[in-house]
Amino acid sequence: MVRRTKAEAEQTRSLILDTAEKVFSEKGVSRTSLADIAQAAGLTRGAIYWHFANKVDLFEAMLERIELPIESLQADIAEQADPLTALRDFWVRAFHEVVDDEQVRCVLSIMFHKCEYVDEMSVLLHRRDHTCCSLVEVMTQAFEKARRQGLLAAGVEPGLAALALRNFVLGTVSDWLFAPQHYDLKSLAEPLLELLLRGLRAQPR
Image (cartoon, rainbow, N blue to C red; front, side, top):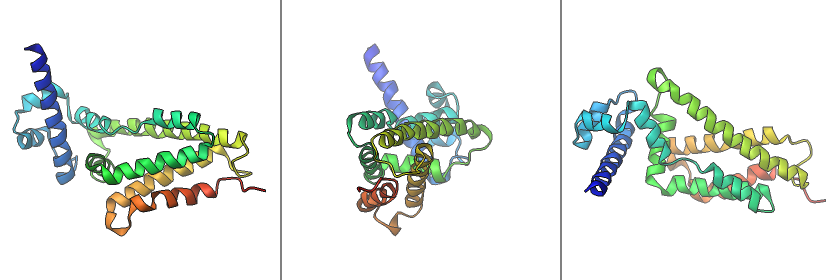
C-alpha cells in the first residue's frame, strides 16, 4: 500500500511538471500562477503545494528534468585523446537532443524566451550563473589539455576559448528555438561546431 502511494505521488508530481511546461509555454512564466497549473492539470492548489513550495521551486524542478550532464562532458574530455574533438562531439549530441527531444526543446524555449528573471524568479539567475560558470570551467580544462598537447593555436587563451564556445552554444540554441524554420540545426550542428573549433585548433606543420 505504501509503495503504491509513493508511485501515485510521483505520478502526480510528473503530471504537475508536464502541465507546467505546457502552460508556461503557452502563457509565459510571469503570467502563469500555480492556480492556473492546478486547473489545467485537474488538481487542487493544495496538491500543487504538497509537491512544490512555490512557482520558483516548481520551475527549478522542471529545469532539473533536462539538466545538462556536465559530468558527462568531463568524462568525455578525460577519456578521449583529443579534447577538442570531445568538445565537438558533446555539443553535437546536445544540439541533436534539442532538435529530437520535445521536452528538452520546450523547457529550453521557456527558459530562454518565456521567462522574465525578475521578482520571485530573480533567484534563478544565481542558478543559471552557477551552471554557466561550471560549464566554462570544465571547457577551460579541455582547452588547457589541448594546449599542453600542442593542439591549441598559438595565442589562444583557454579561458577565453571556453567563454567563446559557451556563448556560441547558448546563442545558437536560443536563436534556433526562436525561429527553427530558418535552418536545420541537426544537420548543421557538426559543421557549425567544426567551423568554430577549427579556428582554435593548431594547424599541422
